[in-house]
Image (cartoon, rainbow, N blue to C red; front, side, top):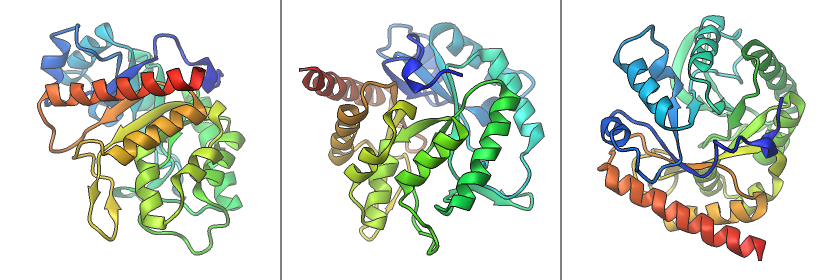
Length: 284
């Protein structure tokens, strides 16, 4: 399996999460300033119909990434083989550049919380999750990427910081990392750590992709809502990620309070300006 440094030449530049609110407008005009699209895996685990037809249209115009929320890789339940078979079939059908999900658990005893719940940062959890990732990758016949999640509580028995835990899982499982810059910012506020410590602790060779998004600041804590524009501190953190890790495919996530497509494309344009300026400084 290739590592993150061997990212496909097709899967490069700046992308956008494809959402039904604007998919027709985006797909009808191939001149839009977007290099690739990310789709939410669970929206397309269907036998046919309009969702898959639209997905095929997207595939014909752009490189695609598949991003899921149901793998529950940190759970104690057995892996959901029905879900994995659907995931494998969809990946074979659309041939995405990357398949990703979250370093979290989402339920227990067959009950789905519909939330991305953090895992304890322990050696036992590293071994448990790495073993499950290895089985998933063997079943899919491809490497996956795990995304760092936003969190709002800590486990008292966690033994290492999140970035050390993330590195340990990725190295033990031999998988990639989808680094969500906004999630680093959110968690750094909620848990009072320096986000630059996180960036310095992430193994650059494992980072395959960046996510950037907006959030809701409630004063005492921040919630990762994906329903606001990206704020300046997150743009600055994205620039720092590029300086430390180097160029990787990056995208804007917007899942609620979705504005007109033009506003999202303006954010993609800002991401392009930040990336161009930062990478030019890095190369100087």
